[in-house]
Image (cartoon, rainbow over all chains, first blue to last red; front, side, top):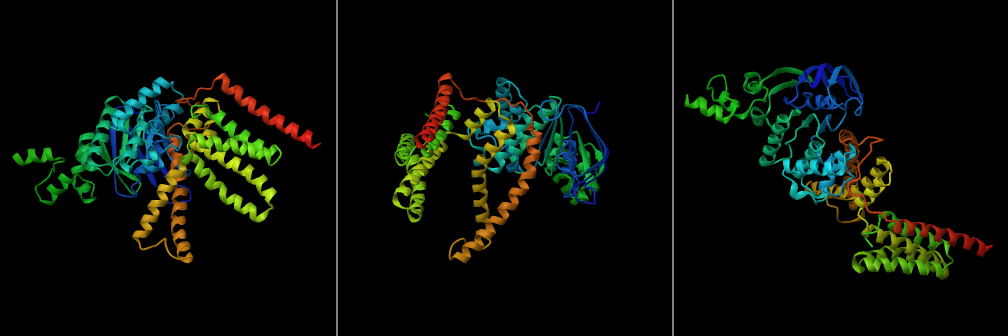
Length: 265
Length: 222
């Protein structure tokens, strides 16, 4: 049974006539990683806000269609979203990184021992244990991004929604986040991620959703990222794009390993 | 002193301020100002006492321009009490500790949030303002020079700062919502400060002292 189902969902932001999301349908199973890819204005971020129950409830606007989430509200067993601007995601109520990460679990009313355990695990998972005593206001963008992700992960949500989670990160930090996404899925958590880090997706995502102009254009396995149509839209992996540009023949490989294998053949 | 419960520290500040205005001048103000300055000196002469005196100095100057000497002394001592005690508590009390105390005492998360967010916003806004100044400098704006030039630079700083803060309010609302910060949430205090019987008694004592001073002052005047 799907954990999150969107059926023909359209959404209009306040005071707009054109929908940011048009007839979008999607189902996400427990333990599944679904990646939303698309160019600017494709509607991926809006889909995440709708899935997080923030649009229209907090954002405002008009929604049509059905959003069905099998879980509780926010946090434990519910939904958690990481938005693309980490400096706006700080609680404003914590004066150390540890307290910032603990902000969500504390709001859920967990006992202090449980909060401490969840915070330690989240700090370890994001590799930011050494920052625990730092003031969040003094962190770099990449460090902040990890803290914000840790704050959501610590709440143990059943559905994690990530909007450009690696935008502020260096390659090492990005690799860490993608390993975390796989680990979350391994624990049964559903993950929906909107990202431009296309090269990471073949190793991370179970399914790819190609969005264009607010609509879901195609859904498929990661091999979708090596198809001609996505190459033309600038949404293929670098390896697939290079292979295609070099006219080496379809089907294009997705990753360096696949390219090497094809080349040897 | 910094280990005292945040409410006790605040009660002391409130009591000193109240007594400075209730007790007859100049003796009352002299006593409370001496107490506040002593606290500031004990917390750190350079870190607390000097900033308190520097902050109070312009008020003395303005008072002297507006009033005669006795009135200047009377009001100046009261203001010095207020300023020194507020600077003292600001230096001694980490905002996070106060928020924890508020949550532990059963205050609503919204009230505690308003307080903490206001305090934590200062370094964030300072950092952002600096980034905007740097960006505007890269584009040729000089914040130095004559008054007109400085005013133009201020406009180029203030507008993007205000707009970015307004934009941030929307996004922060989303972030707080997704992190379980909703009205009525039963938040767990992470490290509630210890509030012993002695401290609670001390707070009551301060309240009673202020009440008694007020009653005495009214009766004495009568």
